[in-house]
Image 1 (tube, rainbow, N blue to C red):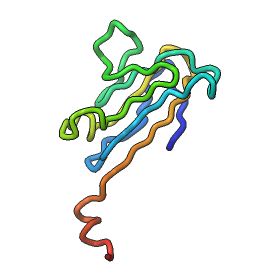
Image 2 (cartoon, rainbow, N blue to C red):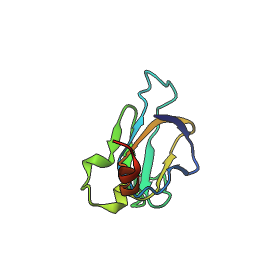
Image 3 (tube, rainbow, N blue to C red):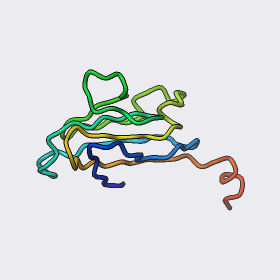
Image 4 (cartoon, rainbow, N blue to C red):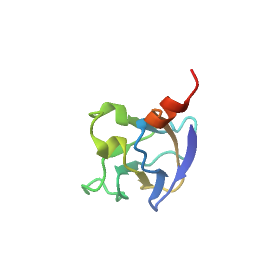
Length: 113
């Protein structure tokens, strides 16, 4: 689990990963991180714009909310293979990012049983 501060400029929080099983982002509740009063916008494949009227984001989180790629079709590479970017409408919003990956075929065949 990685705790990351998301600000007004987009940041890449996960690189492209062809073996990704799931990625989950949670904006910590303001009871844990008092400054988490804004919104965090997430986008797979490119940087989002922090604007509710924009169609440039895939999901929006408010305090305490979470989003996970397991909620989407597992075959959809937009959610399971591409990089993930976040941007906030308020400075220093603290998120947890958790990514799990599946072993590659190469790892499966070379790992002793």
